[in-house]
Image 1 (cartoon, rainbow, N blue to C red):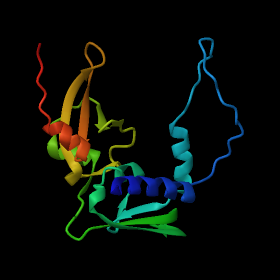
Image 2 (image 1 turned 135 degrees about the horizontal axis):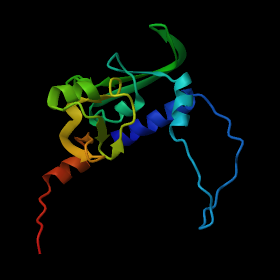
Image 3 (image 1 turned 90 degrees about the vertical axis):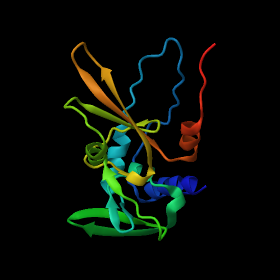
Image 4 (image 1 turned 135 degrees about the vertical axis):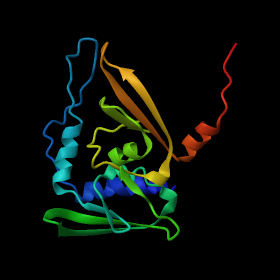
Length: 191
């Protein structure tokens, strides 16, 4: 319930504090076998909303991305406060402040994906792609943060992309109830 509340809160705060965009096309596309190729740039909306985004703080520590908040254990959140004023912090203007306070006995340990990989993995110089639960992370790994205490499993695979080239595919599984249940499930294969 807290996770749903947190996600709902984040969506509402982004909508209230984010930049509005004009969308002149109200036409609904109906696809068929004769349809032409449709191109959708999903990240373009994110870049527009970041122009007037709020600052996010967890126990007074700035979290640079809202997606990283999704990987904060919602059971350890005590309160969420929103200020709708304009703030300037270290020369950057923020249009609002979202302050998340965690419970007293919980101290999140935020690490960037790069720091998490450096701490736990021995990767070679091949490129790295991160996936957290079912989501591929397309953010800068030096800025995307995750609470280290909310990580359950880190899986590393080498994926060939050409005969000579490979990538490191790092899948991070978080400590959600669903993931813990799946990790503890015993699967018997055979005929």
